[in-house]
Length: 81
Length: 412
Image (cartoon, rainbow over all chains, first blue to last red; front, side, top):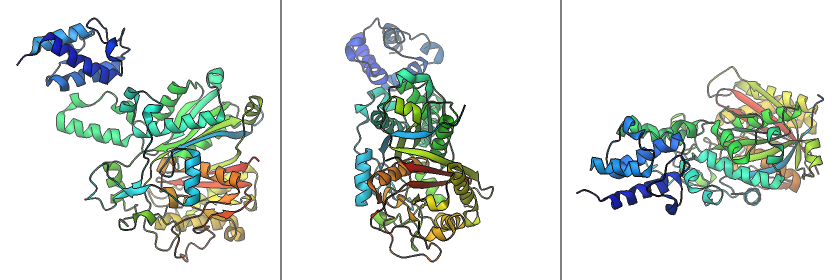
């Protein structure tokens, strides 16, 4: 069963809010983890781990490096679906 | 630069007998603690099933949710105590940032974090190990984190000497100020080793009381029927300052640090040297540093862990230094009430001792029912006594043969 883009976004948002401790309304499709959501390098590693848990998938390091924004993350998850 | 005088202007604590210095004092006076059967994990297979626990403190009152989730408990405890201590001292850190340092000790730091991540590694592989594992486990992160939160940019490190860690941290802080290297130091100790691996390890070493039936009275230092120590957790933080600096900014002075001594046993990994020889030398060095005679000490807060070995050897050590006066000086082990907070023990015990000086009251060794012929000093059994106290000595001895002794003077 594949998820819609909206469903993936909602799940990604939940992971971000929990992981980075930011408020929900700050998380938009265009948000960049480091520039808009205040994540440092350790935060992003932890975020990827949390995304793997949430979607029951593995994200390779070379893919993880490219997931710098919410849009890129949602598209990546959809492509794996 | 001439030697500076070092005073104490703030104190904070979180421990099984209270979540603030005031609560702690009330509990000490009433002999009240929070020693209970551990429920955080299944203890049915452990030979010891109880410990002194910190409860009912909401860390989200002082830190955001993300910080609370990531930080190991010993850092949370230490930071909570720091907030209280800085508030009492009324110290504006921003204004003097480069002159204010942090030196906080811990015996085992984030052992709970290492344990959880080791399980994740073995069960689910290396990709499941949090990037925060090492940063949250290492002991020095407590001093690092507190500098990040408070802005203190002076000397910054941690002391590690098992159950003497907090005393070594205070000794180092005292020496940094005394020699003019810092104007103020945030110092003390923090510990949270009550996790499955922490408890199992101390059980295996046969260090702990196994009196699961009578756990509330199991910590009985110097008593004939003592069977081992009772683990505790928490933190004690003190603000040490250069006297002139403190006076200039109009701080209220609680007490003065006048002496510190430390030594090594060069004997055994866990057992103290015969007759407490190493501990005795640390006491002697602290007295010399303070330029005091044994008779000037009105109260000794003993290491008094409630183990067979410590209490006998500490008694011998006190006798070797205090001679005839050893039988008169008021001694007690507040571990009988709080349990043994390992690397945080010295800090909460110095806080207790300063409160005793302020209140002219000696807190007793509770749970004391039967005298041990090998421990025949005045341990202030069971009931608080009124006494004017000018100087206190606080002893701490750690696995590895680390001995540290600090002397504090009343400032009223």
